Length: 202
Image 1 (cartoon, one colour):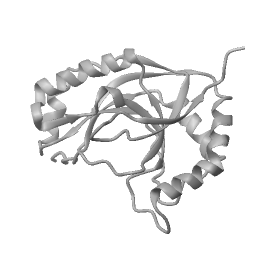
Image 2 (cartoon, one colour):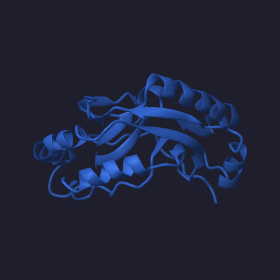
Image 3 (spheres, rainbow, N blue to C red):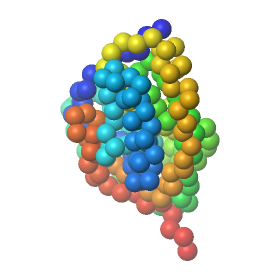
């Protein structure tokens, strides 16, 4: 089984609700990325530190939307559901994500969290009250952050073997989510359109 090459092309008007990783977590992730480059060189390309994130759900994804452009679909979603998202998240207490596994698929090298309950519960609460535009893929029940994708075709088993000794073990505090665009290549910086604070302590 071989890896898939992921072109460094970003579709316009993609939007998602994410956790933007804290500076401490970015430093930890960047250290892991440096190890990946030392091992694989230009066979991988990296998610830039400024855009490291964990996606709660995509609103507009890299898909073909019918009837109207992606941006119009997003505007309708924002008008109908942005306040609902804000209200729901404002009632959820802060929690943490414990990234504790480096996982390799055919498309990417990611950091995973083994305990996904808080993320999944938050996602379920949102999806019980909001709808995603037809064409947006259903969010996966996985808590992760993508570190690298592939520039070249490599044997997947070799990649897994070569990263087996790379340790992932750090905690990301989650006190807010962000509605963002522009998290993909070539800039990776992310443009926050809205910040959704979680429940404030009394």
